[in-house]
Image (cartoon, rainbow, N blue to C red; front, side):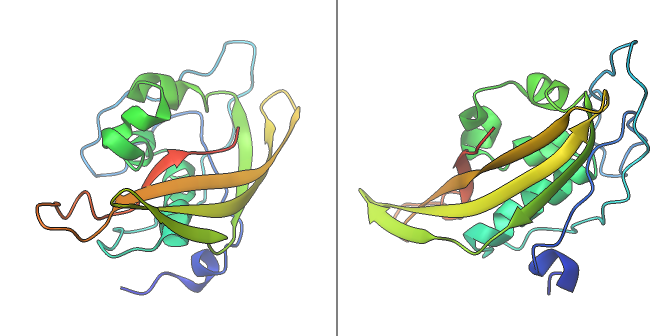
Length: 171
């Protein structure tokens, strides 16, 4: 399934709304609370990224990750981290709460800078630049590499292990 041109080009993805209107996926994780002293941001207009192909490359996984956050599908974005989300170092609720005060969030994703192999795994680094604004007007600017890992095609590895998963991200 082709990725929409705007996503494939790494164009901006508006992120985060204060209220979870539901996305029809059955995800019942609670929406991140908005502190009482902040104005709720407008609902996101980020496009639905659709399903992630099983053979998605590293940059495509990173684009999908930020698009899911734009849809406030935090549980789905969290699961793109290794170990079903555990590699993020946060619970699903803590992950969602980390975006509670964000009013605008834009990610520009580049092609992988490098793919290297080690001990039966492949590792990729994907440059990303995130800009935006918190609900109180404080600007957001983060640059760095998202690191991904997947198991090589070795006997005994599962399809899930052979997919790219996030193992580190800036910010």
